Length: 355
Image (cartoon, rainbow, N blue to C red; front, side):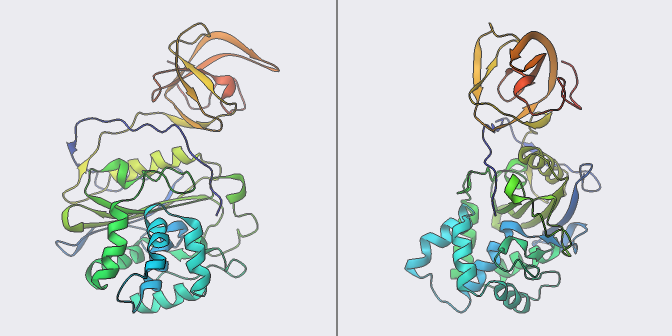
């Protein structure tokens, strides 16, 4: 799967506050979600929403790949340790493809469905056998997978997987920020296996839209455990309208997770409000005021996505053939950027209020 790199995400640091949640998961408009939250301490679900709906698994299937490889093994082969660590900790695609091919591709999923009693999981559709991310998976089955890892798997398998998920790196090996959803919504301890698919021109799954699972809309999933002793298993699988920016999808997913009833969880401060937009240009300056003579407070890397909280008229900027007097306020930079370098069909940004 090809994914587009994300840059410039800054996470606010503030005091932790006790977790609270609404009566039902707060699914953002336009987002399709499958949710399952299971409290291992009480043996009950605290949230279930579309939990049997199938989604393309994206990198969450790496849990099944690891389990299948370790089945009937009593130790981790030295030659495989580093590759398995990278696949689980940093969502390395090359490692997943290696074990997918080695294990017989879709046969891995078929075996694990039988072994774990999965009810809504299936190999990739015909014509996509090599694309492990197109495996069908539900939130309910994701909980079953984690329950097997935590309660039934041999200690060596449980240690391999959970040690890596607790040490999930901020950036995946493909350059994507993995700290959306659970890591951005609740305080540690947590362990996560994230998934994302479709955030890039080559990742839109063109030609497979007739499959039983949606392979067109952008997919973003956050799964794992929260709390001491891996008390709560959280599985949130989502689809976002085609064309949604990666960081916008991440912000929406994080807000959804914050709304869930996760026993014992401590919520992190909410991120700044705003809308994410794609940009163009390289090294675009962010200034302390909406004019080119104001001091520079930062620069936006090429192709980055930026969070915009409001927009304001300022100095007219001319970048032939474009002319624009509107500037966007970027709360994560604490400054203004000319709207010229934001990908939008008009001089003003849709859905963004005036400052």
